[in-house]
Structures are given as C-alpha cells and as structure tokens.
Image (cartoon, rainbow, N blue to C red; front, top):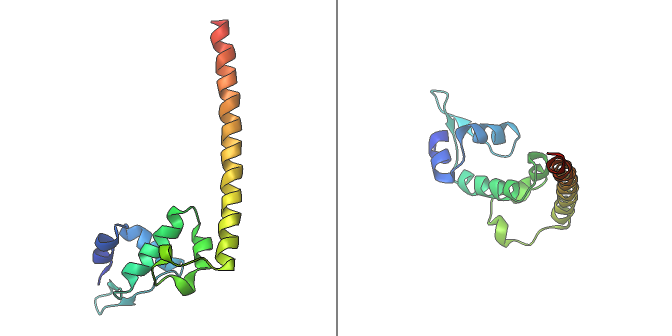
Length: 118
C-alpha cells in the first residue's frame, strides 16, 4: 500500500510516517514511479509505535522495541528492558510535572500578591 493508504488506515499523517521511517521504525520499498510501498504488516507496526508514543515514550525509546513492534503491543507483558525504559521515561515526566507545578505555584503566588496591591 502507498503512504496515503497507510496514513488513512492508521490515522497517522504521512509526514509522521516518513519520520518513523527515517528513524528506522518502519520500512518501505519503492515502486517504479518512486512512491513508497508498505507491506500489510506496517499497519500493526504503526499502531504499536503510536501506542508507545502515546504512553509517553520518545522515538529513541521506541527504537528499543523494534523486535516486538509487529504484534499486539498492548496485550503483551513488557520485557525487563521495556520496564526499565518506561520507568526512566516516567521519572522524566514526573520531574517535568514537578517543575511545571512549581512554576505555576510561583505565578499564582505572584498574581495573588498583585491582586492585594490593586
């Protein structure tokens, strides 16, 4: 199938699919006219990639899962390495949330002080 069909079937933009391909997560061959052609299995692979990205992993993180991206990722128990990556990503997200919460609290405090002055 061509990239437009893969995009339609997965709900992922052609641009994102090209990005995934550049990252080595999906592959295509080229038709005589130069168009990308994907195997049927690319649909499941793209779904698994999106599942991991939606869970907060990065493309670099997803690369560690290359060998198991062709199944039903949500129903398979994670490997030890998968758990390690997920825990690392969770720690990063927790740190970002804490930093954003602190910034929000400082801003709210500053606005509270401002409303007393006016």
